Amino acid sequence: MTAAALQIDHVSHSFGATQALTDVSLTVPRGGFTALLGVNGAGKTTLFSLITRLYNNRSGTIRVGGHDLRREPSRALARLGVVFQSRAMDADLTVRQNLIYHASLHGIPGRLARPRIDEVLDQVDLADKADARVSALSGGQSRRAEIARALIHRPDLLLLDEATVGLDVKSRAEVLALTRRLIARDGVSALWATHIMDEIAPDDDLVILHRGEVLRAGTAAAIAGSQGLTQAFLDLTGVAP
Amino acid sequence: MTHPTGSARGWLTAFMGISRRETLRFINQRGRFLAALVRPLVWLFIFAAGFRAVLGLSITPPYQTYVLYEVYVTPGLVAMIQLFNGMQSSLSMVYDRETGAMRTLLVSPFPRWFLLGSKLIAGVIVSIIQVFTFLAIAWFWGIRPPVWGYVAVIPALIVSGLMLGAMGLFLSSAIRQLENFAGVMNFVIFPMFFASSALYPLWRMRESSPLLHDICAFNPFTHAVELIRFALYLQVNWTSLAVVMGCLAGFFGAAAFMYDPQKGLWARRKGGPA
Ligand SMILES: Nc1ncnc2c1ncn2[C@@H]1O[C@H](COP(=O)(O)OP(=O)(O)OP(=O)(O)O)[C@@H](O)[C@H]1O
Ligand SMILES: [Mg+2]
Image 1 (cartoon, rainbow over the protein chains, first blue to last red):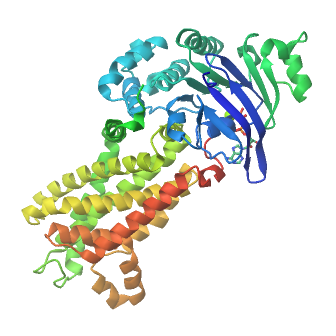
Image 2 (cartoon, rainbow over the protein chains, first blue to last red; image 1 turned 90 degrees about the horizontal axis):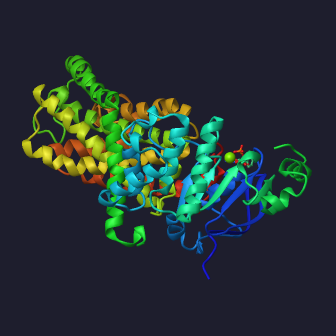
Image 3 (cartoon, rainbow over the protein chains, first blue to last red; image 1 turned 30 degrees about the horizontal axis):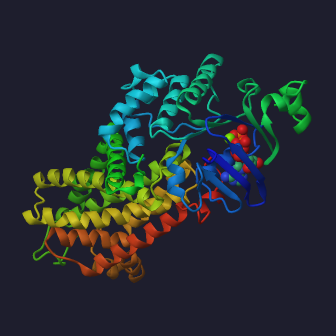
């Protein structure tokens, strides 16, 4: 039996007196799109920082593709592709230079990286921008470039932290559609953190995170019930998304 | 697929990638290169020429004859280039942290000490390019150490560059915000430079203030300067070498500790990963 793309069990995290996450457990199945829905301060980024080992996770376990992050950090990280909430590429370098650099961070030499870069740029529809400086890209283009960067080493699991923040409606839809396409076609799995209801489809797996706690997990349709997702979220958390 | 950290080739690729990025960014920022060069040249052309009249130097090792003040001050200016370079790269670390660049570096499957060490070495390579550009101009200005000195100084530059870079790395882990960098200038670069043997020999310092002399003698920057000075004249200053190596180990160890997720200092920082 193959392990889940991501398996989190009983993870808590605090910053001094601030309890950011309390006993969080969740599973991202292979080849699935899992939405992590929560308002500002819910703990989404903190959870991502634990999964990417920026913070040390002291309680509970995190497994990426079956690899325990604490015992096999290198194997777990090798399977992750991450799109952070903030910009991660060098603005004064070209898209291609950035991608070569990120390929090298995964041990992929230039000889193998070059064809792979053409491939991922094609996937995110940026083939014509390969030699443009990142600073010359639009918001939507640079988000897609970030996704290309996250894909370069063929990760099994994509983590996207509010990947559509700051984008207009059209670019937002494009980035979302791109992520869904990657899942359908290449079998990657994705954990999509957001506070925007519209981005969630009825068939998606959904985890509602609020004040550091998982309030509900299941398919979006089941959680929404007959009243709709917005009302269900309001009932659960007491705040409007 | 083979695991990236499973072969020597993978490690080499990662190291080359990190060096390439640092050099590319350096080339792209031509202003930074010019500033790094103009600073010591201003000292050499203007200050040194002015001080020459005021400061009489007796024969100080490694020099075997009386030397002009310009000649005395050159190794200090070389170390200054490396000091600024080390601080500059710590600035870029803080900058990288505020954008997501540091986060993407740290989620690489390679261990953190290796990633930080690679960044450090890349910075030293850049600083050595700057130093040799400066020494070439100084040669036309009449500052001509023995030819083999240019070769002998390379290992010294590597060690001192690593030490100053590691110091920057450590500071970058301690600085919370980009704005605090002005503070680093005032409280680190200037005191380290002025309270050292870069501008005047330590024995002269003792004449005016024994306390200042002791501070200078403890200053790791003094030892970086002396290591470079002796190497340029084909000698090894063993005390300085030991001090520089010791400080290198200390600073790098402290930086690796601060950036290690297991130690949690990174986690406790406010305004850290957002
Ligand atoms: N470095 C830190 N130091 C102290 N407290 C922090 C730190 N990072 C986050 N917190 C706190 O932890 C809680 C969760 O924050 P987090 O950034 O994970 O939320 P989020 O769901 O990503 O929110 P947003 O939608 O605004 O990005 C908040 O109460 C926040 O104030
Ligand atoms: Mg967040």
